[in-house]
Amino acid sequence: MFDNLSEKLDKALHVLKGHGQITEINVAETVKEVRRALLDADVNFKIAKEFTNRVREKALGQNVLTTLQPGQLMVKIVKDELTELMGGDAEGIDLSGNPSVILMSGLQGSGKTTFSGKLANYLKTKKTKKPLLVACDVYRPAAIDQLHIVGEQVGVEVYSDRGNNDPVAIAKAGISQAKSLGCNVVIIDTAGRLAVDQEMMDEIANIHKAVKPQETLFVVDSMTGQDAVNTAKAFNDILNFDGVILTKLDGDTRGGAAISIKSVVDKPIKFIGTGEKMEAIDVFHPSRMADRILGMGDVISLVERAQEQFDEEEARKIQKKIAKNKFGFDDFLSQIQQIKKMGNMKDLMGMIPGAGKALKGLDVDDDAFKHIEAIIHSMTPDERSTPSKLNASRKKRIAKGSGRTIQEVNQLLKQFDQMGKMMKMMQGGGGKKMMQMMQNMR
Image 1 (cartoon, rainbow, N blue to C red):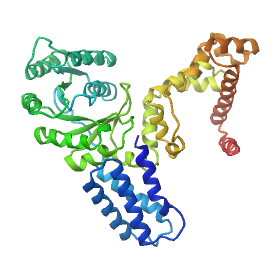
Image 2: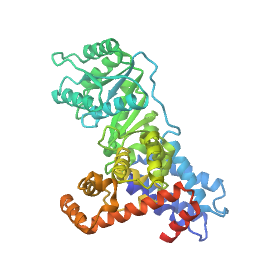
Image 3: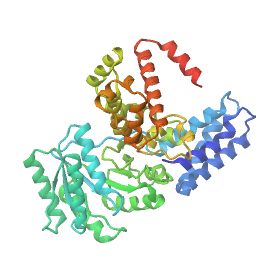
Image 4: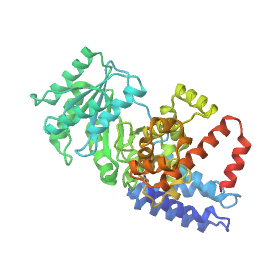
């Protein structure tokens, strides 16, 4: 996410991060490089120019030239301005209606139908709501099928009427169905086109007028860059929508849409899609995104994701097993499953400060744990609970059964043993020993 932009901004700020002489010329050159980085990321020229002018004014106004740490102050100014450009504060979603009606809009291929399912899953699991998905795309039969599949994946009811070609009537009937089923949120998936046209705009405007939604959300593919911003403006002129959803942020996106869309349409980005899984949805936090763009990571979001998967009862059981030296591979496998639920691996690694630069050029596979799981699944239940029983012949059998090498099996056993010692040390209050151990590993 934003790898190219992050790298170019890092280079632009490199001069001021050093300890050399800082001059007004240095600042001007840095600002010029920042502007170039934004333009390369497909940020609108006018927005990029205004942004860098503000950065330059603040930099010179806050005595960057005379401060002991000019680089840090400059990075802070850029971060603050990026945060403001992307919206300032995170925006919530209006769920005041009974039922609350959310109207989804956007072009075909933007990920609208999939995101409708993700949003339903988010509201169901994190907001304890009972949503109903309504299929109002009467032109593309596959869209109705897709919504039913998505609904089944997340365990949410879907209302559709295949014999009806009136999306307004379907939307109104869907709301009635929601009331009869006791659903308190209705998410209406509307038709998209390959390009903005008057017929589509009239149709969605009619649906909007008929159902009076609490939230009208515009879904946009972040990989389309400045085109996404222009499309958002066209939709906003007709719908006056409440917020933007950015999808496919896990792809090779340059970041222009995320950075400039708020400035163009004056509507907040409310959610982002960060992967293919139904759980891959995040509330958009401008300050956290600014941190990530500048290579500072996003520890808060990482902790939040971990807490969502954290099971207190399971943690207590694990703690007791560690204390009794009974932490086995079944427990390890359970921890891996929780990590996998947290989301896309590269996305997670990008939340760790400095990891983005370290991972540059590396392909962080979502199946990073696949070979570990294969090795563990090739063990017998007795071997998983008592790893000490794994002798040479058993290791050979496990390697053959998992399609891995003896060396990989030995490496996993060694890492598992080291992890066990580390966990025991942490539990026993061995903080100093832990620090010494980590320092020796450098």
